[in-house]
Image 1 (cartoon, rainbow, N blue to C red):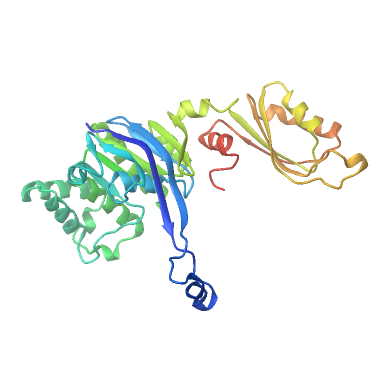
Image 2: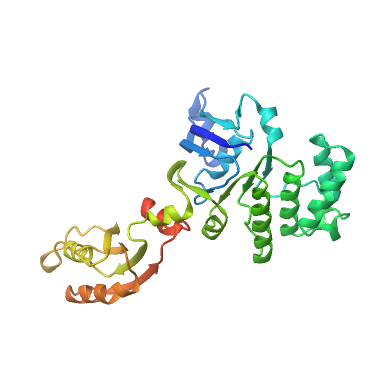
Length: 352
């Protein structure tokens, strides 16, 4: 059984600035010197310790650094700083040993369209040293399990996106790797195929295999992962089991309120309601220039109330708003969830 470990991983991408209009500005001003490069920080000190035999998820929005992390762990991306290990092997010092231990499924299928489904599996098995009999048996087993037997002798150029994705996962499992990397495994899949995939992932894990998946699908993270790291802007902002993470949100429930106008006094009164743990105001517009009765008031798009209860608070909130002559425009209640945890740490929704 093999685990995964990273220590202070940092990855900075450099990209040249776009050419100016006409294509001559960069040359006329550079005077023989290279144009300055823009740095994009994809990972900023990410440390993980993933036990052997667990399903571990990297949860975060697009651009959080999930795919870069997988790229480093699978030898495709060289880190700017930090270290990574697959078992006892340091990834960038022992790449050959690492590749024998892992199976990788990228976000987009990268299959050879000139081959049949069976040929893809057989060639992959041969690449990893399986003999002809073992290759044939393993290919049949996987074609059956992924419901591809009827299309086994057809070239994959005619496969649907879901079928290609299933074949990509079967190929990654062909040499029976100790660690399976799945980058956004259910993206674009229909619900039936997604459930089949989840079932196969659980079965593979029950054989003692370690699985690391990236996702921004909250349902998938909650249903599949034994532990999660929630990452944003290349940093780990929270880690634990799904139940532990949901329980760590103050109060559990989040009420996102939108008022017409608001005052500090109303925020204080909201904080004083029974069961309210925390009140946060967002996107406060400037109130400079207001006079008289409007002094001290601000236009506020939303307020997040973290509380032990949900619906029963609405009437009390409405009464407070009415007493303060403030319009309550909208209310949205969320029960304890990973989305609430991300909202609490970042101030925004996972989907924003």
